[in-house]
Length: 327
Image 1 (cartoon, helix red, strand yellow):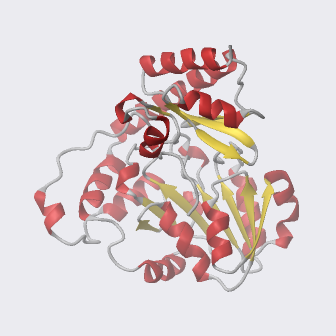
Image 2 (cartoon, rainbow, N blue to C red):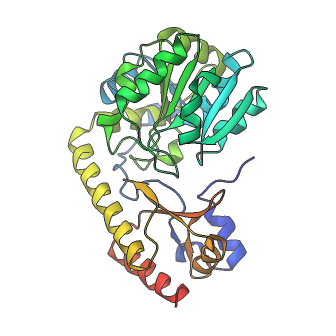
């Protein structure tokens, strides 16, 4: 399996620092999670039921004509390649590596390229996989640009797959409202914006025909009863969502400014992380870890991704650590 952020227990063991003494900035998960209420006993005791209004709440939140709840967008990433005959697949780089891994494992011909190169040869792909905003590269696309790409692909039976795991902070840029179009598939994650990564929940927005195929592939009960109960309320809580977006954008701007003051001006970012390209990223990752601060290290290209510090104390701790390691 591929490496991911969030391996805090492993870092605690490797560096000999107690788990509670760490500042974990290795993920793009909001530190200001939605306040989870008490979960009724019935959610634990009964099998999950599709008629619980979760789909209706999700359709309203994402403004999607059709969608399917899945066990995190990761489940869809692994299953979608199984629904196509062998295809030529172009995937954005740098990006979430599980996309290329899944398409390669399913026997497709995969090319991973920087976005500028990738988009100059759309005619070469049967499937184009983009991440918007990109993780970690931060690239963004205009809605009309994406719809034009989709039309070109769909005209010859192709797919445009857009991973919008980090889109919740800027929902106006989402393609979800257009996903009744054949061959347009959007993946959404509930873990990042709502701070519910442990729930392992996401949604696939696509045509009803494709979602039926995907549901057959995944089987029943993709989400647990407690997860469905929590998600239904979180997705409907508009009073929490609006100020949460503002808070995340402000926190991300403060993080970017702090990094820039230390000569680490981010190459890219969004409302949930900032990304810095550095030739000494490996050494900096280790130096920060020795001080109990976990970041996400990338080797292609060498870079560090910083998640959001949760409060002033965490921001000050990062500030002091950067001053030390760069002294």
